[in-house]
Image: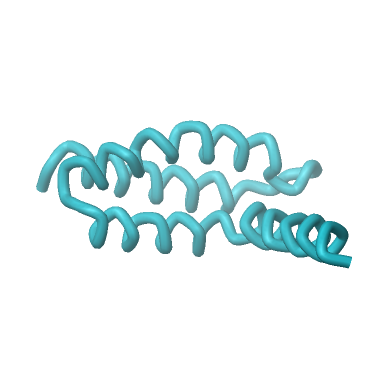
Length: 85
């Protein structure tokens, strides 16, 4: 297993451990940190293993951090619909 995949697995384990702890702020500060750390790891995985493995890691990360993705999609829909209408 390469270093990039090991880092991606450690990132996924850390994200799941963080999700197990109770939080009054709904884990948003941890999500920001995980996103900031995960983007370079995703780039590293894609660089070492190609776009298909990078896409699999991206989908796995999106399943872990689904609420930031949901809010991003909602914001994009509002923005696009506002410009189109």
